Length: 405
Figure 1 (cartoon, rainbow, N blue to C red):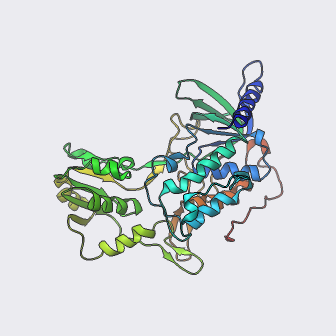
Figure 2: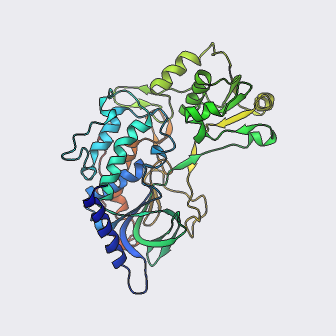
């Protein structure tokens, strides 16, 4: 970090400390974005672009390292094309991408725009954008452990790795806190079967190191992640056998003239190519695929020594939740509203969309997050207690996404 950048951050920290009154009341902001993964980055950028003063915006994250996208999943092949990543980087003026006077060439810029890539390649410019945004807004490093209403605002209770606890007030809070892999209990009946967490399995070298030549590995799922893991085990590991338990037929994204069928659930890119070549008809040696039901699980799972659950994700919960709401609280899947002044976005709070053939999917992906946030932030600006919701007012004009949807 440059000396001038360090000075700017220190000045913002000092101004935040001065904002506390003599009684030590929490600093108050108009907006607080919780999470610095792709959705959090998009939210901060769009708020700044929509004339929210930088001094009125607080950004909270434990590490500001592009979330799980930039840390846990860096070895995963993307579903998003290079062209859409590039569109995301350049969409917000506040991203300053590419920065003036910075002639740095990013690896992703050398790839064909219709190609997919490793997430680590896509995360590299996002780290740079995160740095740029942190020079403009107030930031706090730590984990939001609880949210609670206080005098018409939201109090964010923050815990740090050092064990200290602090709190901030905000008129509006956006949760972009991500999701965690969903697991299943099937192997609990068989104490000899060891679960390999999907977070470990999606690092090829770690997965290979976790499997021995006498292991039979069960993989539950038929999604993008499951197919990547099957391929890695067959091509790189010495596993004796791989047993894939699936509940649905393989599904592929189909590129139409102006839209994509199974855009959010279908296999894409190199993973789709490998699946088409290997999983229809004659299967590779060492691979067995069975429909997952009580009978087949009871027959095949006892033969396995390791198990991986590639069965999707579920919302990451705040350690102490949102006071006054149930642990598994609901959100509006079409506009992201959780409660007045409290909103969700990203993989933990995805937009639900029905395509022209009636397929209902959850929209997950960087550009989809950007489109969605651009359409709902004008609504969110009106939906806080401080804005006097419930009073007659002019309907906010919702922004159209770049493709007119």
